[in-house]
Image (cartoon, rainbow, N blue to C red; front, side, top):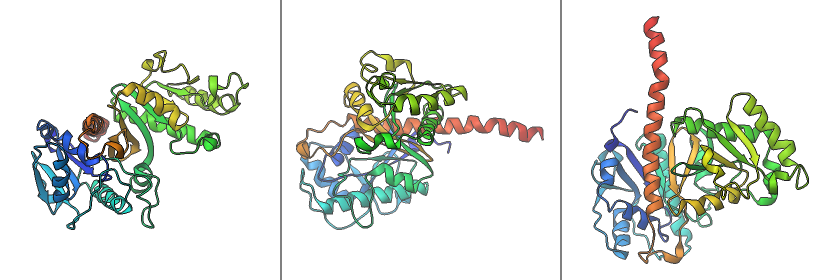
Length: 349
């Protein structure tokens, strides 16, 4: 796995072609310096991307390949996953377009599993038009959890701000029933391991937000924080995990308290993502922690309302590429360090 930076192959699933995904992909690689960092491979069709780039001024040149073995460093490679034409109507919700989004995503995931690409960056999909008899998953993360080894966890990242979730795409009225000792322990342990191997933090400090307002206020506003969260966190802390909380969520970010920790764990989706997106200023990245492969994505959706209008901000997607590369390197370094004691012991024997 010890590869030079320019040889890191970044596989890219094209997302919903009627959204802004293909635009932010192409805008990212307008900067030729990106090709010094990695070798991109877009799972789509070169003709389709040529059509997309006519919607804005673009100088990107594609290297079309029919086999992944033909991928060239220093080029924006497009793996021609299909040959037929696709009717693109920017801003339109189209089930046929959803089929191509999943075709791109599943092919890229297969290549990731087989080691033909090193990391995966996914452009936004529409969770409604991707559903079919063959694909019955709420989104990228659930499918990756099934296909790759490990335990998938959504972690939002922007520089030193990292927000993980105990529950992600769960209706609010069901959140408390999901918060079991097993789930809390498993999720926090996944985050701890990710901080060590993916972000090179030797002894990570983790903060956990309470489920209820004021973290339950001593049981006055719900008992889950006192009866479920606190005992689990104490048990983990006593076992050596630097985990703290539960903290009242309302003032945690506004007071700057989050800056004292390497990761913050939110009880549910919006509790974590609203403050994260407020603070990340459009440069946040969605990272799927806990898996044996690296996958990132921008922190936004298809943005149908601005698709095809040359208005899409590509910074989040660009940051997703950067983060995927950084984590890939960090994991390589972690593996090398972890193997050194073993090699020493073998020599002594």
